[in-house]
Length: 174
Image (cartoon, rainbow, N blue to C red):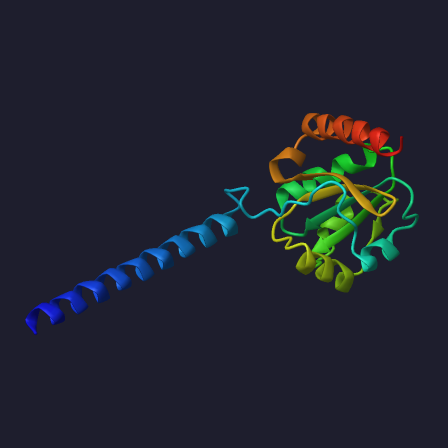
């Protein structure tokens, strides 16, 4: 009888330990995501993925190459990226994630087309976008290339990404 009680007590302690450690890990991951110290908060969108219909309808010309930027108001990297986007030789469409206080809009070029908040929220939910900045090059309603977070923070990194994306775009239109 005592042996059974000890075994049950041991199993219960082991289960509680596993649950406790899982909770600690979840808290640690959440803290890292909130502080922006990891790229784990970014979604991955494969080339060839079809754009959601609502986003496709928001584009000025869905067939033409277009750069779509998902940015947020309180994101310093987004503001840096926003100042670089006017150098990209294709139309730029922006979706603002979260609260739109207008600050990020002032950093984007005058030619930027803004996606409605409801459409941006739907796309963010559908693609599990939970970090910013995220940029996507699309053509004919499909993703050609994408870049996340740190790979969008400097003009040199954006230029390298753009060169790769242009090559992918050429290959796609052959």
